[in-house]
Length: 325
Image (cartoon, rainbow, N blue to C red):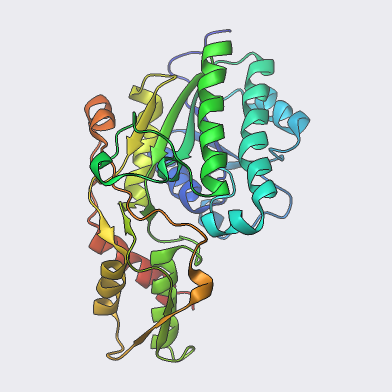
């Protein structure tokens, strides 16, 4: 494959209109990169409206190989960040085939487009801690070598994408870095995700748009949370410093019980008495009880560490919803 100039700073983000993608675009602009993003026709763009005139948007669909091939031939990026996909675990139970198609076939098309365009970018693919699934107590904190026991169609799709990245590295020499990000939260997070959902409900209660009851699912699960702004900085460092073909956990290496996440948000609430109500529709068919990562491999390779405390992440998320409800 032809070599590109080292000083070339052209980047491509799939999923640029999403939660992490919009924060990554901001970071890359700050670092002086030319930023391109793939969008589908009529994609929601509220997360990137403030970047109008500073980023380049190209219309394509990851499920349409020809359109992605055209993008690769046109842009010829030095770095690709593959963040697009169906990212909500519960939705994968109701639409398992669509989740698999989006996350697996979409990723395959991306890799094929890079291969057939005969370009040589470094590609970061956003895999997931959900791939680990059923983690036994003695296996925590979770290392990259831990067995994968996925417990949802989403997790299966991410494991398939993960291994496909490895296969394209081995078979075709594509410079694919696999990052297994643990939970990340912050401003712009969709309201179906746990911390953002709690924050939105509190903001609605404060404005008397919802009764003083907050609906919850399983509060006993434990998750490893990182601020999205720290997570995308990890993605950025991965293409600069990590070894293609290898896999890296990105995590805070600390576990939060979901009930404690809720309690912390309630501390920030301007309403004194809010009733907590269990909602059975929020309980998953099978849930992962504990996910806490060991990111020592990634930290030693890149020097990365979280800069933003999760308490600040929660407050920023609540303030985000206060400004929007």
